[in-house]
Image 1 (tube, one colour):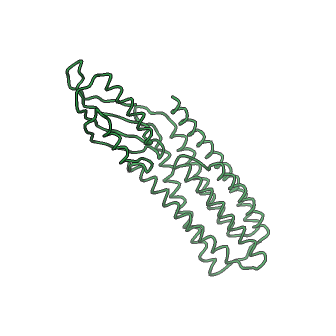
Image 2: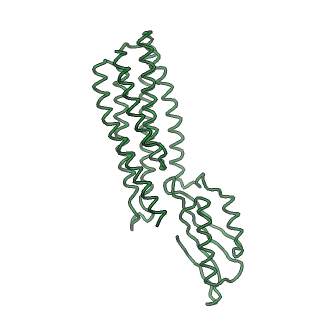
Image 3: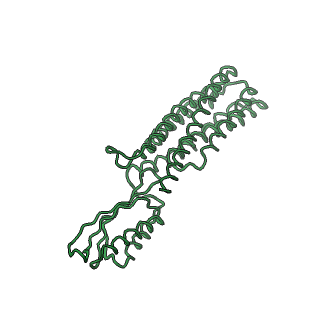
Length: 302
């Protein structure tokens, strides 16, 4: 009960964080559009379009994160936790599209730099760093893949505005307009690298790869160390959403055991598996229960 309460609290906190980030980004996107028109800055207008895409992706992230909190039902017996992973994939795709847009806009500006109101750009850049920085701090420490991708959105915007701030200051004193485009390309490369890492994590979840935080060799050795267990097979370990890990295993005992021994073994095993970051364990146990003198194929779930 305590674990489920903590889990629900963590997911609710994640949803609240994404909601705050959504409204921050939406508000600043509107400010960007107005500021871009007033300063006649194509760079800021391009960033406004990019942030509009971010706002849409944040809305999706908010929806999927909230949906992932629904409990299990007859159709989704594991619950809806993987919807947050789907949200992460969609957001990563939007980030890729946004980065490509930045690259497409930056390359022509390297060849043909364009002038803009540097003072207006400086003011907007400072505001952008403050607002998007607040969103990053709010999302920092998020536990789900979805939250981490959303935090990457916000970090991308902070870095983008830092680049605009640096570029606008240089432009103000030197009229060297090409610096903005160069910094934009560097940021796009950084974001694409991090998107690759997040997409890899999301697909590892969807493909049911063994979680990185589970020591499989140590876990196997631990299973073999139980006195009553002679062997095991059909061991499967995966994660529902990058946070909650699941394991199924078939244990074979080396001798007949009592019903009490069986229960004690299963109880001890579930406690031990938590040490290996396995939160939900399903055990199929082949044993002979002495009192009944019958062979059982026992199934047990936590």
